[in-house]
Every structure is written in structure tokens, then in C-alpha cells.
Length: 294
Ligand SMILES: O=C(O)CCC(=O)C(=O)O
Ligand SMILES: [Fe+2]
Image 1 (cartoon, protein in one colour):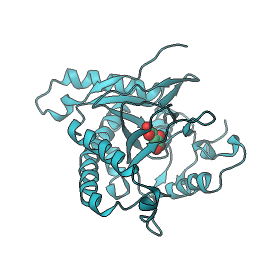
Image 2 (spheres, helix red, strand yellow):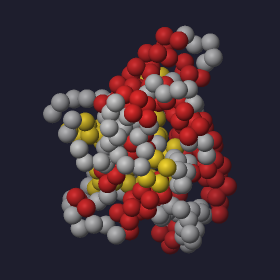
Image 3 (cartoon, protein in one colour):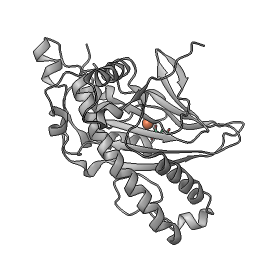
Image 4 (cartoon, helix red, strand yellow):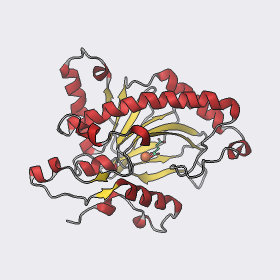
């Protein structure tokens, strides 16, 4: 098996007004290459304090270890946009966990905007184009994940997929199991304390007319231990129209690789994949559903 590690980029120059342009340029080159190769990289000094990441993972472990009957009392809110999960916590955890989630959200929504502006620049788009296009942060969300240990017959955590949103951040505990596909092979994303894994989603792939890739990834459950992780989804408002930007089509004489669609139509199809799983993997709806045949 070939070895490959996703690149790690230090974001501190972007938080430091006086930073040399060279250090930003170097970081952007690595990010641009990762985005056009496979859509996956890691960042450090990203604005989310290590102490908060550690606290959040610990809190998640405590919560998920509660007996199911406790957790089941806390059913999802009716009509909630998200498909499932525990929307509320046991009372004595409630305040603490809400506070931690809010803190994570507040840090990562800033990092999301920063990353969006970096992607904007890496794509060579006019300044703030993505920010102005995607100007509603109310659709962003955080999810806490728990993956039980693999059994003899089942090690599936999350099967192979691409994220539908714009940009995803993940931080994971030391157990491991997140894998990325590159050139048809699966590579582990080795846990690095304090690092945030970044992957691009389908929205960026469509807007950039495939210049940047929506990362194909999965989670394989490990033996002996549960794995905990958090995901932050820098998302897009459901009514937004998505189509390849003219910068990557008309202006450079390239045909669009996707037809335009309203984001909620894609969200509905993706939700259907979950609620009515197709019997064969080929029938699962991916972004290719909107691809224009060549
Ligand atoms: O838990 C992880 O590491 C990744 C989760 C993921 O890929 C997703 O929710 O889309
Ligand atoms: Fe994902």
C-alpha cells in the first residue's frame, strides 16, 4: 500500500495582522493543491482552543455513556431540520454541554468564514465572492458523533460519502478511523492532537466546476474502543441556487459540468438516501445526479 498523509497547514499567519505575505502564500499553495487533488487537509492554530476540543470530547463520552433510557427521554425535536440525534441532554449536563457547543460553534463559524475566504482566494475568485454568495450563517451546525467498537462482522461507521455542504471541519479523539480516498485508495487520517480536519463538500465542487474536489471519505470503526468526534458544517441556505460559476465556465470557455439546482432539492434527495436507503449502492444519490453528461 502506498503511504500518504493529508497535508497539515498552520493557519496562524491568517490570524496575525502583521504576518508575512509569504507565509500566507505558502499555506494557500498547500491548500489549493490539496483541494484540487482530493479536498482534504488538516489545520493547526485554527482558532479553536485545544482545551475546548478536549472538554468537548470528554463531555461527549460522559453523555453517550448514559443508559439508553436516559438518552431516549431526550428525543429529537419534532420538525427539526436534522434527521436524528439527541437534541437535549440530561438536565445536569444540559447547561455545560450547551455552553461547550455554543463555544465550539462560535469559534468554528469564524474559522469557517476564514476558510471560505482562503478557498475563495485559492480559486482565484474576486474578493468576497463566496462570502457574499453564502451570507447566512443560520444553516451552519455542529454534530457530536460516537462510533461504537467494531464487531467481528461489522466495522462500518459511516460508509463512503462526500459531504453535501460547503466546508466541513472535524476533530476526532485519538482512536482513529476516518479515511480519505485518493486515486482510488483509502488512506487513514491519523489523529493529531489539536488539529482540525478540513474537507470540501459538494457545493464547492459544483461552484468551481470540479476545479476543487468534494472529498470522498468514510469512518471505519476500530476494535476495542468507541471513537468520538465532532463535525462542524459550514453550510448554505436551502433556497440558494447552485451552478458552476461563470469564472470556471463561460469566462474560460469550459462547458458547465452540472446543471443548476436549488440546494434544498439536493438536501431532500440526500435525506431520502437515509430514510429510504436504495437497495443497490449505484442508486444512492450523489452530486453526480446533477452532472451534465459529456
Ligand atoms: O466522524 C468523522 O470523523 C466524520 C463524520 C463525517 O464524515 C460526516 O458526518 O459527514
Ligand atoms: Fe462526511
